[in-house]
Amino acid sequence: MPTTIAIANQKGGTGKTTTTVNLGYGLAQRGHKTLIVDLDPQGHVALALGFPPSSGTYDLLLGRSKAVKLAQQAREDLPLWFIAGDKSTALAREILNRRAFREGILKKALERSPFDVILLDCAPSLDVLHTATLVAANWLLVPVKLDHLALAGVLGLIATLQEVQDEGYDCNLLGVLPTFLDRVTTETRLQLEALLERYGQLVLPPIPVDTKLREAPGFGQTIWEHAPKAKAAVGMPKEEGSEGMIGGYAHLVEIVDILLRG
Ligand SMILES: Nc1ncnc2c1ncn2[C@@H]1O[C@H](COP(=O)(O)OP(=O)(O)O)[C@@H](O)[C@H]1O
Ligand SMILES: [Mg+2]
Image (cartoon, rainbow, N blue to C red; front, side, top):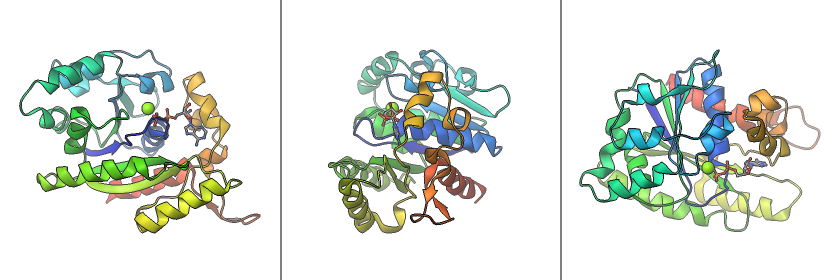
């Protein structure tokens, strides 16, 4: 059975797709057979990997084809696949809304698929697809942009997680991932402190703000291909001038790699 991780936050632009794609590539590099599923009608997963958006997710959600058939290999030399979405994903959501037993649809579609890990890139919303995603997931990872409303996006999500757990599904919070960390601004520091106060150990090492991350999707590349030495990839010094590094997607990949190896 694959381990399934939902990457979600009801706010847009918090780094969900960026996290999904760079984590997925990093896990594939470590030998995990990885599948990314794009659940956002914007279709950014395909674009970020250098492919056109298409209706794979629609077919998956409506049970037209198996995950393994819909999966496209993202890189010839890596065990990395993705199921592309586009605006038809929104149509699938409408159709599902009218069905009974809709919350289990994604879990059923994915549970017997031949992957080690499945990453679910969510749309910024709390709707039927969102609930279906948490039902399908073993873990929830929440990228939180360190701006003035950082915490707001997390609270609604945790409430939905609680509801899903109350229904007997085994989805747990993997962590809250602070993104767009900018050490120069006080705003960032205050938001990070607020997150630490509320979520403690569940706050993962942060991802710095980095223009290399913004550029990479334009080339259809992950950070590992576009700028593997960028601070968003390798992290930043723990303190000014210190040797040890903290954060960056390398750190996240390492944490999830350890989780997968159990
Ligand atoms: N740490 C970061 N530093 C700079 N730009 C980032 C960072 N993370 C994401 N971005 C950029 O911010 C935008 C929103 O990120 P994205 O991952 O698409 O968010 P979401 O999927 O949550 O809507 C994208 O243009 C992306 O390239
Ligand atoms: Mg996105």
